Amino acid sequence: MAETRREVRQRIHRRIRRRVAGTQERPRLAVFRSLNHIYAQIIDDHQGHTLVAAASLEKDLRGKGGNVEGAKAIGKAIAERAKEKGIKQVVFDRGGYQYHGRVKALAEAAREAGLEF
Image (cartoon, rainbow, N blue to C red):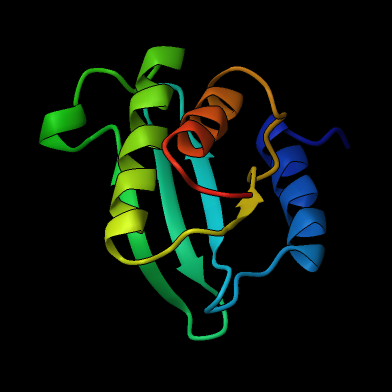
């Protein structure tokens, strides 16, 4: 039976997660993208805590989620919030999505704002 797009993405994401894990020194920047919004979290997998989060649903970032410009705003916001918490280095978890379009825009905006991958 054919897999759905979601099942394919989840399978790829599980494969990525076998190798990518966030530590206290270098947490994981996880990206989730839906049709209308994009979400980013910085996660310490050893403790199981989300340290920083940003989403296109937030009031100051609302209305920009479904496009590349919105992804850039989220990338910049997550990097600024991470700096406030003293986080400089992260590992990037693309969540099973291709490194293209909104995911790439978010990553590059976070790099420009000072996060190191």
